[in-house]
Length: 226
Length: 226
DNA sequence: ACCTGAACACCGTTCAAGT
DNA sequence: ACCTGAACACCGTTCAAGT
Image (cartoon, rainbow over all chains, first blue to last red; front, top):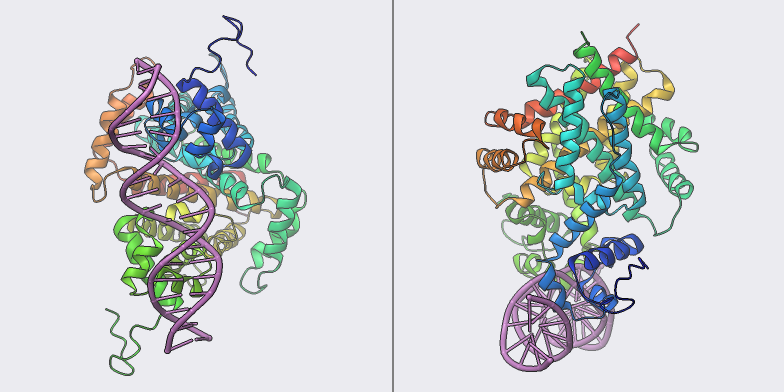
């Protein structure tokens, strides 16, 4: 599709890490992690499974590379001189939206902090925390609270997408959760049963942002700006 | 080991969901999720793999049941009349400690909010949020911020434990992370390189609690108690 | 009702052999 | 240097057959 034409149509079919990752992302988007198979992938790329191993060490590395490829494109570019809180919200929303579009990323992000993209996100959050005036020793704690919250939502959304029929839309998922919570015992789960009623017009994205704001409010109250 | 003796030694070997889950937890603790195999499990239980399927629907259900079994025992009992913040900290720490002891739980918890234990945790957090005086509509957001943060740390810890050699201790892991962060480019990752120095005497548990406290501070500043 | 274990339909990964 | 594809060593799961 990418219609990159140097020599008109020759070499279109040469294998490369780039093409493998591209195909992997497509398969993951279409069918989730279980749909990515070296056999299916090699069929799509019209090779044997062994060929892929010349370009990629193993399945884990392929998943990591695919997640990084998608996330890299999703991180918003932010200039200097912006309000730290806004940058933090933008970074957080960038991750959130990327995971909504590609739920399988959620499982990947938690792998080890070695993931280059996760490190990049952590770095960006840390710098903004610094800009907010949080004192040295507490910066690590504050940045990691933000990161962990973001990763928690990421994992949760990924799991949600995985446990539901492919292609089920938002409203149906909310209905499922609502009916589950409503079916709980009233005495044991008063809070959840109460919340279930609010679920009909629930906005994941707004709730995600509300959580980010809560942490930001905590930072502001603990370390008031000078 | 459990030394339950009704009729001295008879029927010790009868299969049951309970015994299967118990054996599964042991295998998971010993070797992580990849060590739990129906073949290995049936060998331990001295049966064929098919026998297990009579008591358990599939591997997913077995993992869920194993995680629930461990987490149920880990949730602290809290009486009435306690300070909500303290209850929230206790619940959060209960989850944290359970995952430190059984890292494989971390991956399970995010499954779908249907997990009975996750629901129970959510319920407990929600009630405390209510007790803190957070107004109705905001209770859902605040409780889910806490839950998502806790699950985020859970997933992160689980991933950390998985990506490192079995049995590597805390100090070694910190060293690994420290040397990774130190190797980063100074211009691109000033924050992380700076933080790496603090890593030597870093306390996961304290940092986890600091995050909980940050969210609690946010709640307090947004919804000051009457 | 419960257990057995061979068999089915898959996996990821390797590796001799080709070009 | 790169690709091929058969083969290896596994999986989870099913199911006829046993008791």
